[in-house]
Length: 233
Image (cartoon, rainbow, N blue to C red):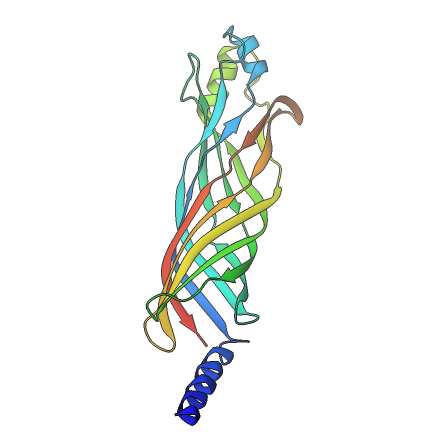
């Protein structure tokens, strides 16, 4: 009996140890649900004769294709790199008489590196985990919407149709956390579910002929989810 128990213990240890050093690729839908807050558009409020502290900005949510690469460092710890196809966002005025005015749009890439702690396995095939990490968000392809140009022309901020109106967003570096589970369906294939919160803070600048005419601080801080297929090797 002792020999049988020892054999079973060694087999269990061997199965667990075989996972150390393995890689997994998770691919599926990755959604970003923004929970933004911003400073006020004080310059716009002044030239448009709006009440002070009445106009901010809002950013819409978006879903793209996501890819997460996992490396099993030890039995309980792994590292994950989260990537996705570029997210697209519309930026609009929030509040006041010009609520909904389109300011512009941008794209961003939010690569995030996580360290994950694996909790005890459930039902023999569900591996829950929690993680914390660092995010670096890169904004690019910022464009000004024609609605903003028209509004600034009517307010006589823009006095010449040849004047260059542009939008610039600063890149962001922040913390991130996540929780989720990996479902093992076969030795190599499974499913991946994940929910994450990312700290993304940026400063947006509307520039006219290279000079900033309006600056706004935006805390996007999105809730991020993913549902995908998992392949381990």
